[in-house]
Image (tube, rainbow, N blue to C red; front, side, top):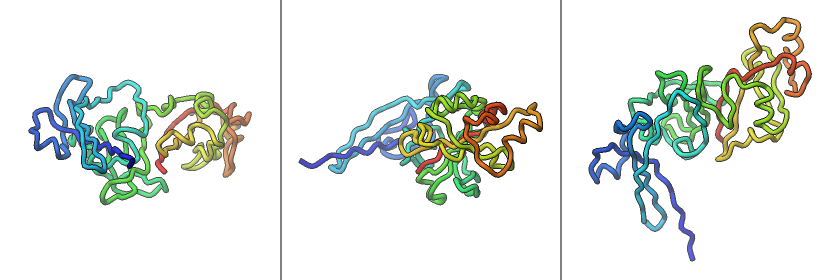
Length: 241
C-alpha cells in the first residue's frame, strides 16, 4: 500500500470571497472580532490529487506576550506570500533585514509599525522570499521563545536551556551573544530551529565588575564573574537550519 503524504497550504481568504477565489492565495484578511483578523482557508492536498479545505480563524497578536514557535505561519516551509495571506497585506512590507551572517538583504517585515509585535524575516531565497533563515525581534518585543523574552535573567535562560551555556565576552557588537547552548534545549526548538540570544549588562554595573567579563574570550554562564554581572536578555532571534 502506498503512503499518502498530506501537504498543508496556509492559504487564507477574505470573508466574502467567492468559491473560485478560495482556490487562490488572498493577500488580505477580513475584519472580525478584536482578537482576529478574520477567517481563512487551510487547504490540504496529497499526491493523489485529493484535497480538503478547512475554514479557520486567523489569530491577531495582542500587546500581551506572544509565544513564537516554528510552526504554522512560521514553519520552515513558509513563504512571504503565506505570511501576507495569514496576517494581511497591509501588515506586511518588504524591507532590508539582517541575514544570519550579519549582512543585509531584502526580507519581510511583519507589523512594522508596532515595535512590540514586529518581526523581521530573512529568507534563504531573497528574491522569491522562500526558505526562512532568521526571524528577529525588537528590543521592545512582546514575543517570547520557550518562555524567554526581553529582560529575562541569566537564571531564566539557564532553566529554559536545561544547563549552562557559553557566551562571548561583553565587548563590541557581539558582546554577550550566546556562542554555544552546550547541547541544551534552546539549541533545538523543533522544526529545525534554534534560539539566538544576546545578553546585556546593567547600565549601573561598575567598571570593575564589567571588566571581569569583558574581552575577546568565552565564558560559561555559570562563571562566578558572569553571575555577579547579572546580565539580562537584551535581544533574541530564531535561526532556521
